[in-house]
View 1: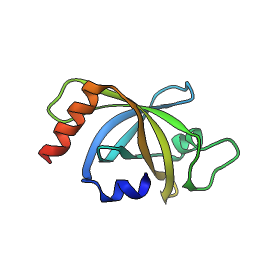
View 2: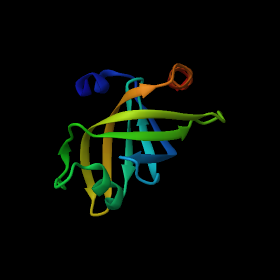
View 3: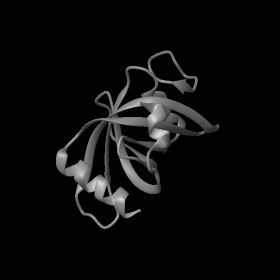
Length: 121
């Protein structure tokens, strides 16, 4: 699925979002890229430690990890909420990481708003 994501129309963004993993407190992240199948977000090292599986701190492919994301698209007051499967982690700097995710669960209304946003870009 990750290879397919690179062939899809990708929209660069800078959307503030909240991310929650394993019932933890929501943390602010930045959605950097959106496609019809998923998103990439940036976070700090603290969030990266919460996301990565126990005992694993090195970037790379990620398996079996899900995060809950909430964000608003420009020009829309509705908060989109989705559960995402984490696919990869890249370290950008000492305190900055990029995670790539696939949508696992997304409401039909939220998906329609996302598709409309992507088609306009």
